[in-house]
Image 1 (tube, rainbow, N blue to C red):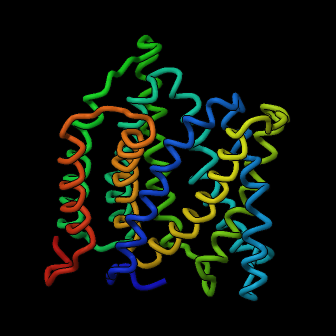
Image 2 (tube, helix red, strand yellow; image 1 turned 60 degrees about the vertical axis):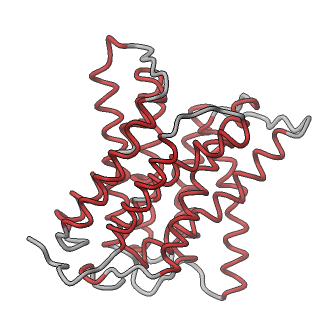
Length: 307
């Protein structure tokens, strides 16, 4: 990994960031189709992991480079990454959503870049750069009016405090994940190796948990919904996992966390195009502010070491 004080995302990293955000945003729309299958989300994730693992290994075989999963340091890294990046957040989200609702949960999760910035400075994965901090604040504030314009209903207001803590912990897990992968990237392994290794760890951790807790659920393949959902999730998952590691290696944790902002705007746009949803001009405002936020977090000026 490059020195954390010299992150300089180039144009390809910027394109990768935008594509990563769009891919994550497409997951939101695909989730609406997934709801029609009545498959438990955690079980569906387990099926996706089992389906994508052979594809990752086929890619590794073609490249002649496999993840070093038998090296203790690498395997510990992969298990920690999948635990803080997928397993714990998924469990927390499943607990928080019924309490505070999906809308408020989304607002708390959108705080991930702010948490990422604070942890990056504490863990010294990035230099203290106030321009990046301002960029993250701009992105966060730009999304607030867009999300607050939606009807928010809290299903169980009497448990609001518990729901807020759980939702905030989700953002903390994602922020820690960004910085942990950046700081402890296994020496000598590239993006495809990490993508495959993390999928192996997901197979070890997530799949048994999902099937033991929720049980095996047969996939309803009658009609077109299940093939579309399964194929879509499989394709988007493989692309997004590789893009994530590519962007992280090129731009660092703070820059990569901006994909979360892009995904929310992309999700709204997909909703308008695919489902005829209506939104205010805040969508356009959020897009413009997002461009400014990405420019601030990705730009490297003379004053890199501020404060």
